Length: 338
Image (cartoon, rainbow, N blue to C red; front, side):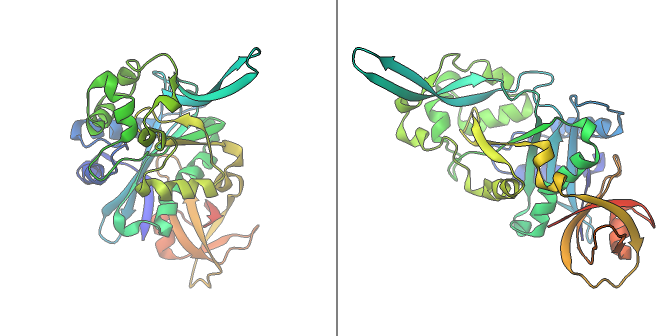
């Protein structure tokens, strides 16, 4: 059985392995033991704090295989993007030009550096081992974060965003970076992403051009990257689109990947999740598959379970499910159909 739980300091060696295997562009998962250690400690502090409104908290989760105690994935929630420093992105909008004399009214798409997305809750750091891709475990890793938000709404904004990794080749070549960012930093795309993971995106973003970049003036290969998803990031997009997330007019600074956006109250796993008392027992005549979590903070747990659930009644969980969720008779659990 796989269970999603908050990260612990003892997870550091396995977490670094996940970071090493993660997709280039997942800058929130740097392959650096000291930086990962800081992220783990920051997450532990976030789970321990009493919070009445969203701040700089970062909630870091890992997906653990209970049969061999190995980590197979990780994901995060940053309560407030841009809390300590601006959260930069590129806004992709049309600039209109008109001439009455020539009877011309023409719109030109242009990219402008902005930090409009500061203040939103940010989902990030999604990575799962290849063996579990496109399985219920991917759903668990991504969507259980949403059950955590549902259980602790005061800790998060009323809007949620996520940046999806944009296109780059197998060799780590990004046409968008080469056409835009490289002119200002003289760094390969992989190195720029690595520096963002170790430091922050602000020190690079502040060197980006402050004037609009007109899209038609970019090479066609770079234009084709605007809003394009890396093939290995497609599953993450599909999961969140089923949750009600939509693309907007913002893209990533470095690879042109899309940003997804949703109102928190409208997200499927938040709006449709239900709470009910747990009833230990078994065997279970399963009628459906669900994501199930407790509503704890520091001891948050979530699993995928086949259940016979009738709305408005306690839900029967077998001993293994109760142990994984750390719940006993009568404790509230939250569940949503997979």
